[in-house]
Image (cartoon, rainbow, N blue to C red; front, side):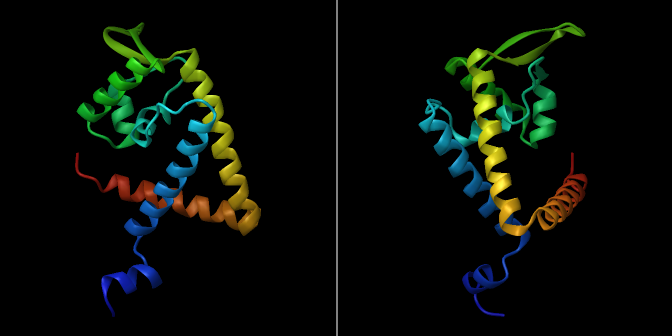
Length: 153
């Protein structure tokens, strides 16, 4: 069986693999964004930015989509608002609720992030082959969705 260190080198579990993938992508994404003028963003901001729509999203939906606690999402929204990436506005469907909407800077960041993520995914698809990458991504989505359904509310 070996030590944990040996096991993590030769047969890492899903948690280790997902963390390595997440941290690697975050490093490339946020490093490239910083070089493009978005150097005030941190990886934690991705919990909001990744799910933000041009028409706005409720904080409760951002929490559900990202899997982050509502208070964590609220803090991130506050930070992004102070940095000029988002603003809050009343939800036309429910005046008691607020929508988190991207500002012009937020939209520019989204366009830049989309290009970076497309390049990352294309690089992996070329390396593995398009069909193998599509199968990998499909299986990864299935495993992720299955795991999230097992989470306790």
